[in-house]
Length: 112
Image 1 (cartoon, rainbow, N blue to C red):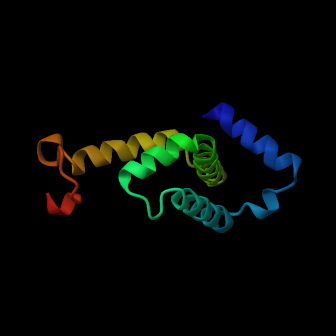
Image 2 (cartoon, rainbow, N blue to C red):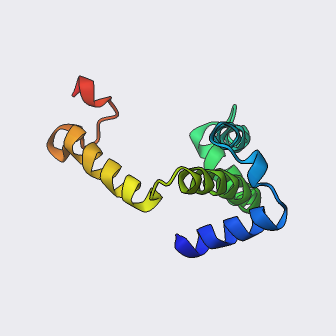
């Protein structure tokens, strides 16, 4: 992650874009790019989604990369260690969704 963050910072800083990359704008950018990712799957069946993702793999990968790039930068700018935050969240989710109760079930933890 540190290597990727270094590249993101270098790209941003070479263009003097830090002035535009406040938390609000980065969060908005995450949502916009996530919506662009969703467009690839809108109105398609699960089977069509898989076929489309295979057929348009590079375009889908580009949108995923856009979401991740903005998310990584947002966390970095806020002083959040994204890797640690993800690990902590996985532990929290493991407590909310114990295997014995959640395996094979797509319900929110409050319904288990």
